Length: 507
Image (cartoon, rainbow, N blue to C red):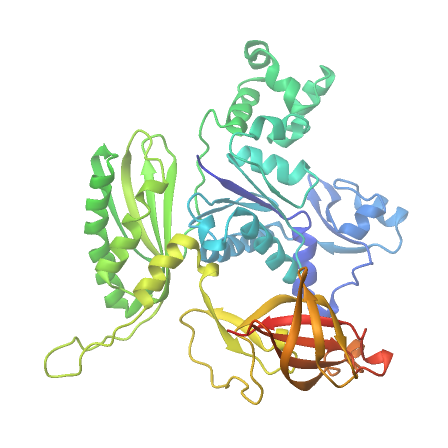
């Protein structure tokens, strides 16, 4: 089953204007409207959130809007610039999310994420990442993934949740209560349905088709079938400028996994030859499979480093063959290096030079394409006194850091995600606890070392100006060792709650 994401940008024109103007842009609380020509009239074409709250809507004559709202900031609309901006955004998402991305004019994108969500940790993390990236760039966005373009488009624009995952097979129930406008029908048909008392998709879908087709033409049935997945709707992806790509057309459709693998093995060497001529290695590889029913399936694999190893790339692609449905057959295969980076030529190994060094990049590529790139990482040191801020996650094959791990005090092998409160008893404020109770188990302390006092990072957060922690390494009577701390210096209340917490476990 295909999975399609609709990314809805409700304020794309005004958000784009604000981002382009930068510091000279109107304040967020100032209503902003974009005006343009509609026939001989000059009307409002787009409004921002502040203007919407005032009641300003699309299509109001400019003179009327200025008379009703004297504080309104009016600028010229740029529909062509908005379209080009969406195309650039589509290419950006194509590089990072999925190989099939198209513009869903005038205010969104559509992405076929079938077989690509695993690279981003699943569908929900992928949608959250998309919305958060857009919010970080200054654009409001909503994202929905569903079985069809029509369903995802409708729920993204008329649903309430900013992020939604419609499970496979749940399209009918998700669409039932949405208005008929969500089906991308012309305004005249929507008005005609309203005169019949039909305002929701559920009742419309239950009506007989023949009277609807006789009165409104074939559009109603076509949009319903597209939304419910009864007929296909091709997504024509944007293409990057001059990518390294190879293709193969078939006189007869192919569908067997062995046949597809054989032709993958023929396309990959041609692609690697093209990459070698450009001095590049592939970081992200897309295999587009055009089916005879006009649908396109896609396989995306990624590598941690630039690669043009035929064997490795062939194996990564062949492992994904079972993840897509060839339908009635595939008539064309296109292999595209959607992300390539410079890669130097290397001297091949011979008996006259040193032996080839064993690397782990092949293993990491194999695992990352199975479990997702976000599931593979390593830790790197960060300059911070607080233990939970003293490390960060970096890609598995990122360059070695120049910073060293702090070694002036021992650190536990396992650091808990969050410090867990414990009940403890200490004789004096600067002494370790005599015993503590963690997760219902009372542990008597046999020996201890400390305290190691850690202060808050007041230069980052004013609330940490007086914060202090006293860490102790303790060993209980069974030989297990723990890392405990008291929140505060044991005397002054402003330094912490004076409660005890367990923060780590030594091996």
